Amino acid sequence: MDHSWVVFVVVMAIVTIILCRSWKIRGRLRSPPLPPGTLGWPFIGETLEFISCAYTARPESFMDKRRVKFGKVFKSHIFGSPTIVSTDAEVNRFVLQSDARVFVPSYPRSLTELMGKSSILSINGSLQRRMHGLIGAFFKSPDLKAQITHDMQNHVKQSMNGWNDDQLIYMQDETKNIAFQILVKALISLDPGEEIEFLKHQFQEFIAGLISLPINLPGTRLYKSLQAKKRMVKLVHKIIQERRESNMGRTPRDVVDVLLNDGSEQLTDELISENMIDLMIPGEDSVPVLMTLAIKYITDCPLALQQLMEENMKLKRRKDQLGEPLCWSDYMSLSFTQNVITETLRMGNIIIGVMRKAMKDVKIKGYTIPKGWCVFTYFRSVHLDEHLYEGPYKFNPWRWQERDIGSCTFTPFGGGQRLCPGLDLARLEASIFLHHFVTNFTWEADEDSIVNFPTKSPVPLHTCGVRQGHATDHTKAISAIRVVDV
Ligand code: HEM
Image 1: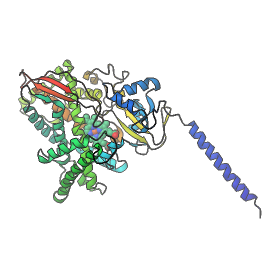
Image 2 (image 1 turned 180 degrees about the vertical axis):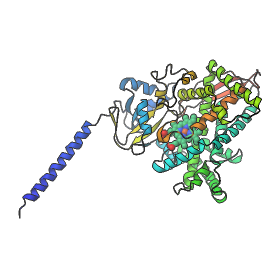
Image 3 (image 1 turned 180 degrees about the horizontal axis):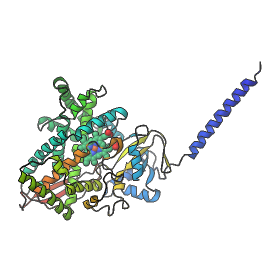
């Protein structure tokens, strides 16, 4: 038998394998390099330095130091993973716009354990898009906006009516109370009462574990938070079951109705209940922080406060003359008020950035982000970049008269497929709060400071107190705002 054919085939196979390997290696060699940077200590990486900077008034100093050394995109090792940190607006836009084939959300373990596997913040693909679409459409609906405006006005008036002369008012606590109740109503239609008090109490326990050691053993912070979440999920589950039995298919009144009416098999009762709890987080954190910071910034900038007050008083007088209540489009028509909110979002950096994991090697701006690495798109550095914003640490709402809020240099609500579906709601709530506050009160501020860390979630934490003083031409007056470390 002639073996020469067999030998020929074997040789060709070996040559092909060698060629393929060398092409692959050459391909890899040709790949752009990793961004420069340092990975720090084994295991802990640079986490300790990141956290110690986060405790200061300038948390971005961790990034600033590395930006000078390595440029706007650099590698590091934080929260247990090798991470590419991006403080570059274009890279951030690319990451935000990419879908789950390229990047998926990736957060520290304590956070993902508490949010659960089915949280909208962690899931990907069609289920995430479906939920995002349903929730976003509902939050944009004129009916909901009308309801929120009505409820918000009532809650704000009720809270403010309870402020007595010379009483110290903690602004962040007040705004938390209001925003939490508003959001819970929009999510599951709970009105003030025992159940909401129970939820509020459990929620404090839950949210305390968002940044904690990822150890789930009896007695640990994470364990306690998970137990609190279980108790809340049980309550929401009961509400869902009652809905299923009574009024399926009705015109949606809240987010639970919207998700139940969709009828998709993927949207199980467990998934909906768990997500309702996660969706309450902005009511306890982001929205109250936005309102509190806006009050702080305008207090520190008398010119802005004056203009804000004039704009809102003008609207109030007009509506009083017409004998009409304010509707949501009235609030949105207040252009300077909107600029105050936008500038608060820029300077306040309520969400400092978002975290993703690369699903494959990604080449961008001359660098490779290797598969499996985390990417931290750090919005704060972009929002405070002196090349993008003149006098970045100065509260200047007037800068927004000429500027576009839709550019990649301004991303307080993220972007792409995961752009915050609650952004209109957050702006509306802040506008209503500011309107009632500046048209009914004057105040003086105690000395204060913003505490950025430790955060219950990636937001600054601070408590702001307002004390009433002597009445002026407004119905009531407040003589002190004090920001107290928590
Ligand atoms: C000042 C207030 C708020 C800020 C600064 C804020 C910011 C953000 C940011 C940056 C993201 C993107 C997260 C990512 O890309 O991984 C996000 C997502 C989200 N936000 Fe907000 N948010 C606020 C208020 C709200 C409110 C009131 C709601 C209503 C429940 C809400 C619901 C959501 C949801 C459901 C997502 C996840 C979207 C998805 O992954 O598909 N947010 N938010």
